[in-house]
Image (cartoon, rainbow, N blue to C red; front, side, top):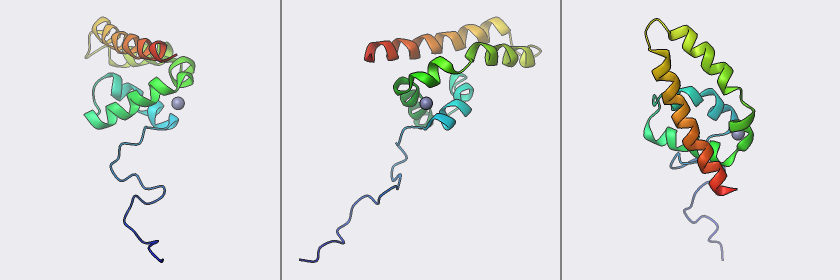
Length: 101
Ligand SMILES: [Zn+2]
């Protein structure tokens, strides 16, 4: 019986790319995600991570980051609108976390 070579997913391989994002990816792409600048698959992975990982959602100083983002782009973007849009996304995410806990 030497059938050890049957086809199957390799260890550590992300065959279909549907592994959840890790903390650093989730945080580094958080604002792309909030601003809907990631594609559907990546957005899903980041969302999935944030829903699973309360520290990412809770400890990351989103408000501070948001302020600097708004300040930087206030020449081009209406800050209130951007602020509201991001807040809306965060509310959805936090709702999901609470649902699970
Ligand atoms: Zn995390």
